[in-house]
Image (cartoon, rainbow, N blue to C red; front, top):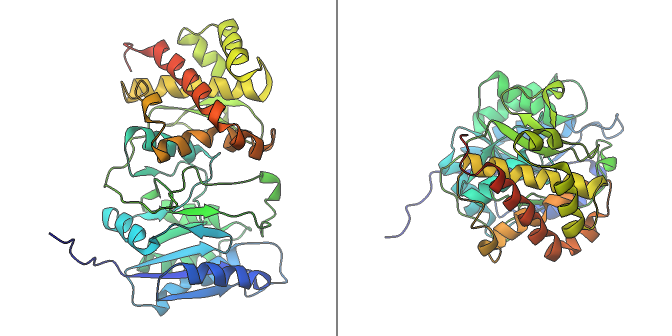
Length: 357
């Protein structure tokens, strides 16, 4: 039986500084969404900020007779069959704010990898900001977001967007896999020192979604991309003073530091520094995954021919270490890195297998 016609009607705006209107037009033409427009910064000579163009872009929702409005930045590439993929995620989560992208080194990216590995189609946003590279909202909410941005203050629309959504109790989700990839244009907000910010798992071919949202586990191993510190976060109390060193937590789970260093040297060629931080993070990821989704780590090695699984795992190293090691080189080495990181995850799984969660 053919699928019934969707009740979702999309509109879109692509926000940009006027100097990048050509890039914005390219994105606009690639969307395949009839009701779409450019949203240019009304004060291009003002201080670097994404808020001004964002305010225009979300307010544009009032111009269209749509059910949902999508705002994209000008430095993105969208998947094939984009409108159908977007409608699919909207049909599953019609009342939510849904980001179609999350960068590969963020907190939310670690949840997104677990979603790929354990079978969920969306994850809650746990970043201290809402990813706004490609953000989809119900139309009325988008209009309200535009009004909010007028007086939000600051220079970043992502933190203002999260504040707006939290104040109204709107679910903030990220679609997994991502439907949008980030290209390498200079940042309008002065974020060029953040390194390359790729998608955690871009489905260039498009995607279909079920309605499941990943349940956030109590603990989240996280390698801070800006400091190279590896920590375990209490997701119910995510404040810096509550972040614990991963090596300390692994020791409580039965790991021996000298064995961890030996294993890292054997598989990654280092027993300290960024690669050791990566190894510890992968061990902890495997341990938490085994506790929360028992049995799912053991089957991963046999799933490496699945494109989404391989992409999700391949982005862990360059996403986490992008300002410390060459991310392109790490990506090129993914054929060796992914099996090595799976070994680390399997070791972590073995530490906690059979233990109470």
